[in-house]
Length: 137
Image (cartoon, rainbow, N blue to C red; front, top):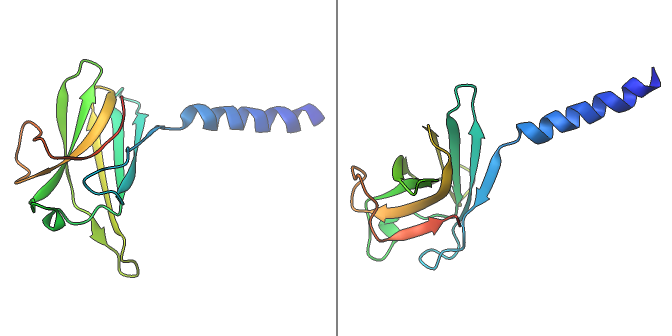
C-alpha cells in the first residue's frame, strides 16, 4: 500500500511534464526595448497546433515612430513558409497601466519561429519589414 503513495505522485508528475506546452520567448526588441512576451504551442487531439501569443509592455502601434495601424502576428513553420496568425491589440487594464495583449490561433503546422510586425493595415498576406518582436529559430 505504501508503494502507491510513491508511484501515484510520480505518474502525475510525469503526465504533467509531458502535457505541458512548448514555450518560446521573444528576443529583446530594438524598436520597443521594454516590450516582452511569450508564445505557447500545444498540440491538440486533432493534430493541430494551438498557439497562444502573449505580450507585455507592447505599446499601441500608433505610438511607434512612424505610427502604424496594427500589429500582425506571423509564424514560420519547419518548411520556412510564413503564415499570418492574426492581429494583436495591446491595451491597458482597468487597474494597470501596462499594455497587455493576447492572441490565440490554430495551425496545422508546427511553428518554428513567431514574430510580430507593425503594419499600415491588418489585411496583408505577407509581412512587412518593420519587425517589432521575434522568437529565435
